[in-house]
Amino acid sequence: MADTVHLMPPAGRIALRGRPSDRAFVDAVVSVLGVAPPEPNVAVLGAVSLYWLQPTSWLVECAPGDTEALTARLCEAVRDRGMAVDVSDTRVTFRLSGPDAVTLLNKGCSLDLHPRVFPVGRSALCAFAQLHALLVKTSDAPVFQLTIPRGAQRHFEDWLAAAF
Image (cartoon, rainbow, N blue to C red; front, side, top):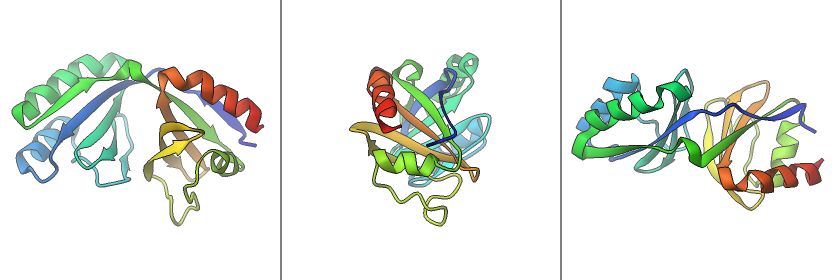
């Protein structure tokens, strides 16, 4: 199966909400993060990553030590045009990599993960092994990140053991 599947170190996570049609909201996000909220199923990967979740919702991921200050800066910037809330403790992320990563992922979800359809920087909310998950392709190697609710970690690990 996948060459490696491992639990990623804790990350800072911030739920960001606002209207992408509101230029002031978008400008406020750019002033703090340096990038605009991405379009559907797109991830902006970097030291601070930004994932599209829903039409008015994104997930910001940063170093754990930066979460409090970044949340405060986002709250101040978006003010009454949106919101930013620290949700770091609500999710865990697994990294899946190697030549058989796609085969393993296809056992848990029905997304088309072919590189032409799901290139680096593509993200998708999906049902994965009966869980609500965020799947992101981070490298052509291939490398994927699968973010799930923290309370579902044991379920995912049991599913993974059975999938091998």
